[in-house]
Structure formats: structure tokens, C-alpha cells
Image (cartoon, rainbow, N blue to C red; front, side, top):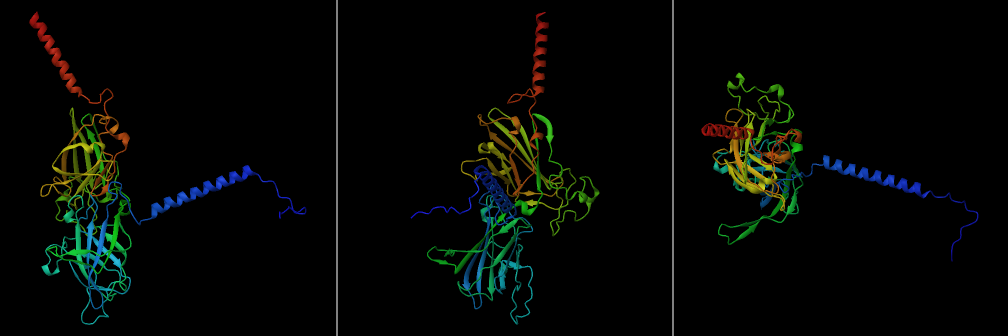
Length: 470
């Protein structure tokens, strides 16, 4: 049975299809723009995870292993592994904090200590090590008594980067927790982890339960496992650390007398009112090189006002090779850099032949691209970059084999795409300021002085021959 339109129904207005389609298109475009803006805002303000394109898998992983249960809690070993290839934690070291999920206390610690005890007045007799709801933990200093030490502890919170020294890229301590659960079902994981290394920049995710860690006895004939294991992953963002760079880059080359300096105020010029001239009498005062607890720098007065300057000099051009000189200068009178690292991105780093005075390790963040390398000081030779002054610099030279299909000195090809110092990206000069080839120069330029000398030699030879013939 079909339905017929009643004769007394109100006639509908004709539909303007073109107008409706235009309205729908506008609505769709507006909706897409709103969604795109929301995604961009989420990316800009979400600090849940950071990403470094040159170290995409770099992070610091904190692992808690509950090794035994106690009358009112548990004993756990906490290990921090720095899986960042070129970013280490320098002095004054890491600081780790969290919030307890219930009313837990720390009865004792080995290999680390809480910075504050908190209010433990409700405990009689045996007083806990820390009763704070949000304890703050720091590593012990070297040289503490043996009964306070734990494996991989007591380095003042300093951890090397994974790419530089994996054996020193770990820090650990043991903690005895009370007033908590005494089984896997009653223990509540700590929350809101905060890692300073030593300043801001790290963002930690929530604790997640993972399969229990397995331990082997020294003879490898028996294995045991932790009662319970959870991990926390912390990633670094330079934008969270500081809105200004902490280093800058300058350029020069053999084919151009112009030196391209660091950009003016490359690091923000925050300390320009408290800087020191290189010849100032203040440098003779006692304690001028003593670091402060808040790590406030005391910089040499420069136009860029950066603690670190990296200079890249294209030195020599051979037939099959070319040579680059790298110099790192410290302008901070209160800071020396131990276990410093320098990362450069350049397409010809896939053909490094020899590196002088520095240790070198290629970084291959993506299997198909090999254009990134890490440089760091040789142990007991130049792995310490001294504070600003005559000794506040380290330098090296790199010999690279040419790839005839890609090598050129035109359009700034000889200069790096990115430079990192201690894991932070440095400010590069603008591309239009790079040293350029002379207008009449070939791809492999010849110095004008050589040409003039050759012409003079030929002229003198011709004159002498004409005199002899005469």
C-alpha cells in the first residue's frame, strides 16, 4: 500500500541545491580549520611527550623493582637508565620526585636521600627517613661510607649519555617503603613523577606495571624475579627547559675572508646587565668561578650572550678530501662542562675519514639516513671544557672524503644543518649570511694570490729568456 501526498498539505519551498552545497562546503572547511587548530594547540601545549628528530627513541626510564615485602610495606630498588644518545645529566645532578598514592612513608634509603624529612611526629621510637606526601630524592655524593652505598649510586646525580658511555648512563638506589600495601593487589603506584636534570625540561608519564624483572645468580644456575615491577618514562623538551637557546654557531671558510658571527642576542641577552668584559679586573676576585646553587651563569660580554659558541670553519679543499675545523668556546665563568657532547648534522658525515682530538660516533636515527655524528672529548685529555678564559675552549679537525656527485662549496653546502651542544640545539646564522664563493670562483676555487704569483713567475721567466737570447 503506497502513500500519497494529501491535497491539503502545505507545499514545500523549492530547494536551492547550489546554495546548500556552498553552505555545507563552508561548514566543512570551518570544521576542518577548527579541528586543525585544536590539533596544533594540543601539540603546542601538551607536554606529555617530547620528540627529538635526531634521537627519536631517547628517554630516561625509571624502573621500580619490589624485591621483598615487609611488615607494613616493601623494599624496592629504583634504577634510572639514560637512553638518550647525546644528552647527559651534569652537575649538580638529577632530582626525582613523586606523590604517594596513599599515606606511605620512607623508612630508609641506601644510595640516595630525601631532601626533607617532613612531619614524622605521629611515629614514636623508630622515626622514618621521610614522611612527606611528595618526597624529593637526590643522589649521594662520591665518598660516602660503604654502608650507605648501593650499586651505581653516589655520583652526585651525574649520568653519562647512552651514546658516550652506556656503563655510566645509570643511577640506582634502594628504598624501604612503609604504611603501604603488602601484596601486588594492595600496593598503589606512586603518581605525578617529576625529574629535574638538573633543571627543567623533562616530562614524565604515569607509572605502568610491566613484567617482573628477572635476576640471575653469579653462577648463572638460578634465576629469581622481582615481586612486582613498574616503570616510568621521562622525555626531554628544550622548549620546556628554556625559551631561548643555550648555544650559538658561527661560520668561516678559506675561500672568503668574511666571518659569519653568531646572531645578535642569540641566547636572549638575559644576562647582559651582569656580564663581565674579558679584560675586567673583576676576574681577579676570589670565588669568581664558584658555581651558584641556582646555576645562574656569569657570562663574558658578547653580542650573542651565549654560554657556548661553536665555530665551524671550512679549512682546506683537497682533490678527494676536504677538512673542517670545529672549535667550542665557553663564555660562562661559573661553569665547566664535564663529559660534554657535540652533535652535527651534515650530508657528508657519512664519509668521515678521520677525526683529530675528539672521539666520534655516527648516529643513525633513521636507517636510510646517515648524516648525523656525535663528537665528544677524549677521556683524561679534553673531556672537560673549562670555564671561560684562556683554557675555556676545545677544538678538533675532521677529514671527510668527497662524494663527487654531491660535493660542492656553493650555497652554504659545506656548513652544518644543525648543531647540538649537550643535547640542546644551537642557534645558527641566517642562510643569507653564510660565507659565499667569489663570483668568479669555480667549484674548486684557486686562491687569487696563487694565480698572481704564477703570472709573475712566468713574466720573470720570459724576461730572463729574452735577455739571454739578446
